[in-house]
Length: 247
Length: 272
Image (tube, rainbow over all chains, first blue to last red):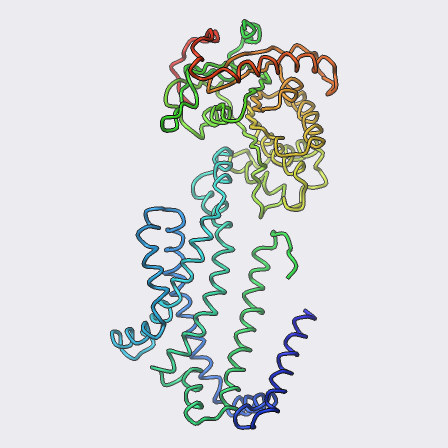
């Protein structure tokens, strides 16, 4: 934890030093960015945009998991499914998120459904790949053991297979979140009248670097809070049985 | 090789195997294999890697099916101790045992008594709440043994259970196994490639090579046995000599050997 704080402090210092070396309107320092963010927050302009972005992120991530997890598991346990699907997962991974966004907006319309679908489609292949690899590491010797002790199919699924897959589901959730965040703001930039991405684009057009940095800062802090405060706590609870490897 | 008649007791055998065959593709893993194990007998199957020992155990346990032949079990639950402990890493030692007890539908009222008894017997009473990764390799295998015993199998199959452990730990576990066996009196079929281990543990050593039973040696050393008893060394010398002779026989020369007499009539019953 100490090292982590030191690392963050170091990065802020570096930012500050760089800002001193550059014109104030080109690269405002951390203090200016923070004050700008604070003023925006006080005006009440921030939270509605942040809320709508979070909503899109949540919806997109849920959709990506709903598509990616079953495909990944299927590819991991069934060789035929692997052969049929792996090329499409690769294709899905290659197509830029901008293409998904444009296609979805043109097909579905400039609305929330299109936004969530575009986010989900972009992130799903990465999640599928993560689970595909994970399912391959399942120890089927444990299933044999369960057979010896006359354990039924449902319980084998629930108590022998699921716990082995869960770490990979959690890992894909975290990785998926990282991807979905980035896509969400990009899609807001091209097709939504609100959200963090929309605001970033707005301030970009006004060439207001302090605001751009303020919104980036906000975004990063919220992301870290979700990642460290929620997801890694869930992970700690869920996988308390695992040997502790120094983090 | 007439030893078999002497070990089959008046009551029904625990395991009767007749004419067992198993192929993996074109590879013949088990060829016309007959074996009878008496109730409460401790039989060691000694064979080199690839001799079909594990496949034989898997078929007895019902994990694999035979291509031909019969396996008749004396109507008892089969326990299996694998080479690896195969504990669920996310459960404590005790919860791992519960997992098996629940699977085998052992009445919950008996769990406490069974666990107390077998954890104590294995010297693990203090470690019931430890996770597998917090235990040493030998202790993990002990937990697996406790788990096997708690569901009270009539027959316990063991597939090189101490093969992955260091010699000192393995030796301790062999001694413990005999002690536990004397108290719980199960039928045990113990597969190994370690001749001394087989001689120390067994009532009877069955030598397997190329998917057939090639030889049998009755070990008439009184119990309890001392691990370093010179009598075990003597039997070991004899067994190793006969083991080498059997292992060197090429599969194609197998028919030159006289078949092992099969005292059990082929029963029509299949796997239970």
